[in-house]
Length: 202
Image (cartoon, rainbow, N blue to C red; front, side, top):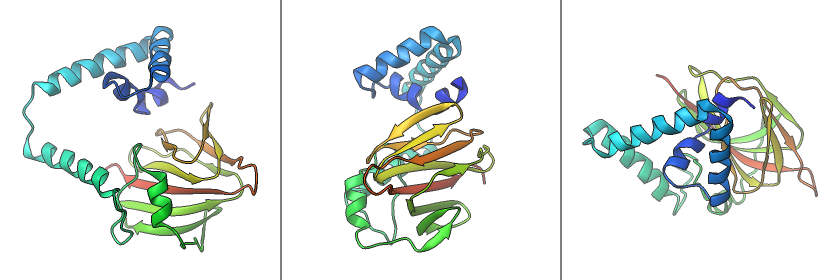
């Protein structure tokens, strides 16, 4: 396991904010006992949250927070003419309903895709995958890649770590980590997902 990839997954922040299930929280506690780097990151995150609680927000940060909250709220009714970004709280059922009747037709890196957003800064597409997908690492100055599984199942290998993904599961691909997606859907070997790529720097 790459410790840095684990730290960058966002699970430490969720642990410190009390957003994890009891089982997930126990796992983070166990990892902190095994790896001092994780324990240091927990302490650092808790200190940052404490400092944040005592800090008044400037207009720029306040605007970013409001933007995130709007994205969360906009998923109550997903409008494909201006689709929201996906994130770990995205509702796969609502997305499936909004995407009814849309079938990807563009062949792209071994995928069939239909772009919902496409610019230099962000790409969001509906993707169908029937065979394995192998991708190189993405660097911090490139883009952040994320997946939301809508139908089917897959195994995602992130470096040396393998995770199983089902409908509704979301994952951010850690930077500098090669990754492979293996379709394991039992019936027709079909995976339907949203893939998002966002530029991390201007």
